[in-house]
View 1 (cartoon, rainbow, N blue to C red):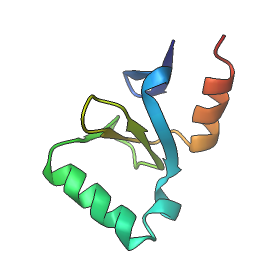
View 2: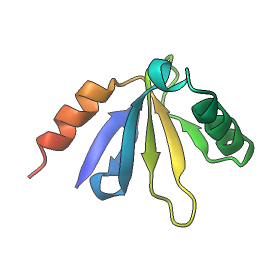
View 3: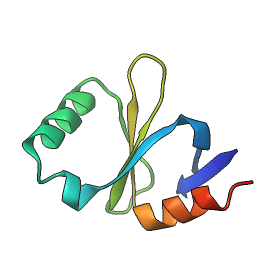
Amino acid sequence: MYIHIGGDAVVRAADIIGLFVLDNASWSHRTRAFLAEAEKAGRVEAVGDELPRSFILADAGRLPRILLTHVTTATLKRRMAQLP
């Protein structure tokens, strides 16, 4: 099953590794370093044009990809819970 994550984007529910609140996660220097390295490697994708509130860590083979979205983690979790 697929989950709508904002804009025109959907992601397979089985590929979601984690959902993170961007404001909370960015306090840690390790998370900031992880996001910076992922951006340099071209693995960060912004979904839509709005200010991102959360990011999704999704399986993409050997290295995960990061999807920045304006949809809150609570909404994403609710959408996942509604899947059959």
